[in-house]
Image (tube, rainbow, N blue to C red; front, side, top):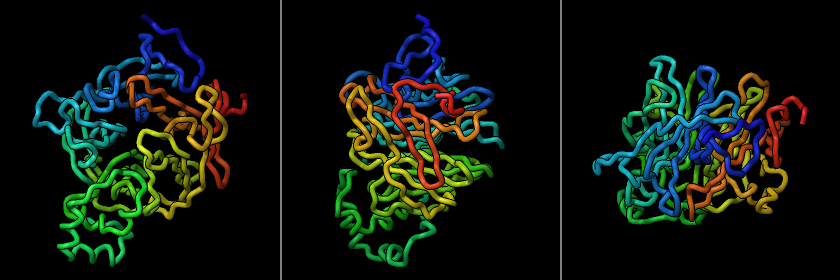
Length: 372
């Protein structure tokens, strides 16, 4: 079956690919390369089982952002029980960037090991010679092992010299949500040797070609921003902590007007919450929180800014060939039937001190020219 061509975005409705099948690319990101957009996301299956990875990362391509061709599975899970990406592991929020020096495409994703819940908190890295793949899994790790962040305090470093405190902390488990215990504990020092936790994540490539990894870390309490190595295959050891004990996840970042803008969310699992936004003059910060960027109400579920239309941020997409045009990508998760998750794409507006995402029932790219 061939899907009829689309000429607009219709948020949260079924979005058919070229075969007429709902696009299966959740928690994703978009790469523009060679005149085409490539959308990568988690391939879900039906039911609650779909929250784990049974297939891998799906890829689609488009020239107009409305109509998407199924490019197949870019990164497949493994049937080898010894593989980090064995079937039924957790692969979330895949992002792909291009490395000009090698001509290769580099995929990063949040990885949890099969049967371990969300305790592993690792990143996975895979590479391909073509944008849609197939990608070859290279390794997984926790970032920045053996390095302190640029803004670590003397007290945070000193905690490493207390073996009893480190051993006690190793026995504690946290649920990933906002709680009063984590800020009182030396989590940064606990993870110094083995690498820092890395959950919800994104990648960003700056104008100078430097690439960065942003993720929820320290039991989700604090966001880490790390520069990647020049080959984009690992972190470099330089990183900062931002939004300390503010419980940000689902980061999405872009650059506009010479400044860095971020949309993120609170830590409430699959349940929606008020989106957050922030701005900085440097990727390293300081970052200034700006409040909730969402405006309006999703008429399909009656949810407005207090629950971000029912969605959660995943990516800020620059529209090629249009000045100052960005699209905010959100996922409307349906964890009881993961394959039915919906894609919520909305236009972004900037003012000198705010980033805004306003609900629209239907819209197209003419909005950036003021035609809608």
